[in-house]
Structures are given as C-alpha cells and as structure tokens.
Length: 106
Image 1 (cartoon, helix red, strand yellow):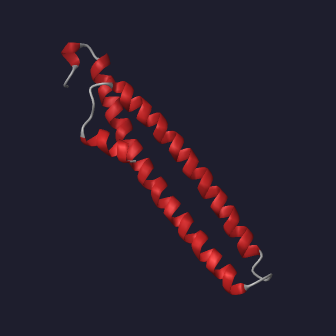
Image 2 (tube, rainbow, N blue to C red):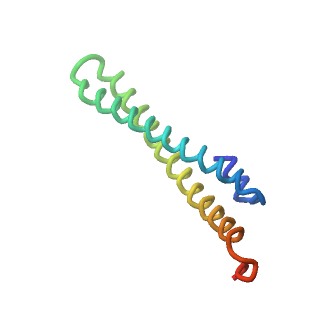
C-alpha cells in the first residue's frame, strides 16, 4: 500500500511501473481475501465449539479472530481504494500516450 501511495503522490512517466504495481496490488488483495476467508472459517469453527472446552479461552479466541477479520476488512478496503485511484491514474496516462497529439490535454 505504501508503494501505491508513493506512486499516487508522484506519478512516474513510465506506465510499466504502474502496471507492475497494479498487478502486485491485485495479488495482495487476493491474498488478503483468502486470509479473511480463512479467519472467518476459524471464527465459525470456534463459535460452533463453544459448548466444548474452556469458555473463557474460546471467548478470547473469538475476540481475537473478530479483531483480525475487522483488521483484514480495513486493510482490504484501503487497498481497494488505492488501487481504484491508481487505476484511474494509469488510465489517464494510457489515454495521453495513445491519443493523437492534437487531442492530448482535452
């Protein structure tokens, strides 16, 4: 996310760097989504087993897993917002490089 922020603050002239960063960002988003799914599965498993074992320990596990899911949601939302902005910058740069010189800047 830091790299995307840097690119948004100082867009490079080379679209290749933006393309690579977008690809990396989308891969990171997929990883975060997979992690969130795994955490949700764990959360449901712990909730389903509340009647077995130490209730205090299960409660702590549920709290921790809930915090991790919320953190994952926040990270994913922030990353998606940054990717949308960077994708817009990329589209604008591509439009400028593809448009005939007379149409640039319109």
